[in-house]
Amino acid sequence: MPNRNSLHKWSYSLPAALLLMAPFDILASLAMDIYLPVVPAMPAILGTTPEIVQLTLSLYMIVLGLGQVVFGPISDRIGRRPVLMSGAVLFAAASFLLSATSSAPLFVALRVIQALGASAALVATFATVRDVYAERPESAVIYGLFSAMLACVPALGPIAGALIAHGLGWRAIFVTLGIMALAATLNALWRWHETRPVATARQRPAFRTILKNPAFRVYTLGFSAAMGAFFVFFSTAPRVLIDRAGFSEIGFSLAFATAAVAMIVTTRFAKLFVSRWGIAGSLARGMTMLLLGALLLALGQLLAEPSFLTFVVPMWGISIGIVLAGAVTANGALKAFGDAAGTAVALYFCVQSLIVGVVGTLAVVMLGGDTAWPLAAYCAAMALVTLAGLGWLRAR
Image (cartoon, rainbow, N blue to C red; front, side, top):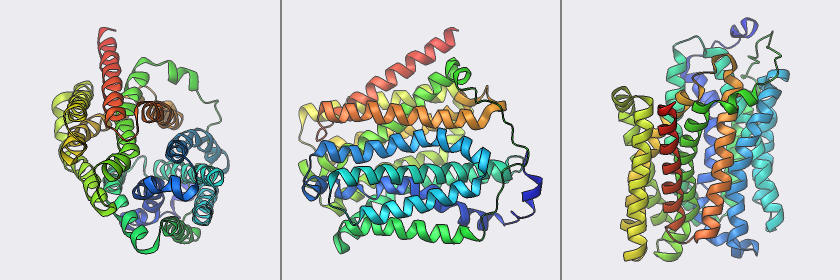
């Protein structure tokens, strides 16, 4: 139930509430995407290997997911506001320090700290949405707008990163992140009131029960297939398009953005598709699109040199599959856990982040991060396993 003692304090209009909450949602993703154009240059800058630089992407993803399982229960105990403010300050501090270091070990450590801050702020933001809007029609609008904003981040983030790096250098990227986080924190300092219910349930989280649920496992696997496809794409795209295909940083960012545009366009019709095909049918078709994209990537790798046509165009089909899967996996995974929604959501994102971070990183490191093979292999393997899981659920 919402916190009756806090609702009178949270009397913002919907646009005002979005302006207050959205920056924390966006920054967690932006810290990944805005950094991509300079990834190929970072091994020389930090005096390290591409594999270590890959860790700055992979560890960020893993910690962002793991942190939610930690900070979710903490926010239930001490409140949303202190978790949000602490996470935002940590994110800002790590961002400023990242801009000031040229040490590879310290850079990796600061990316982990930055991810911890992003995770805390993200959990507190979504917990606040649940506290205030759980029984109000505005909740659907807020979640829909959050999704639309996050779909725009992969399109605009790399372009912004390339422009900032070209004009001011790579360090300015992290200074920008720090300034944005600091501005969002100052805006929230006087306006973000505590919303945690006064009488929060103190039951032990049912982690084992949730993880043993067959539907939770299959649909979380489908979510991991979708999100991991984009993770492997942005992990390999800079090296394929800039190093191998000769794209400029701006050219790379524009090419990269077309995949996000394909996601945004598909999102416009996702509701229609889901109403026609249902949850299982939409996930199955999403995985089929991943398989089709994997086939086109493999053919391009075998028959031609890296190019927009052989690497980016197949990603358009994969992007359609990502949206079809992402539109239904949460409902499929969490359907049975209305009485433990917070814990289930935390596990859903945590398990996804672990699978994506570990399996996706192994694919990039073992199959050649400057080729299409990691993306083709990840999409094909994860899609086939998910389709097998859907068949198993149907058989049950």
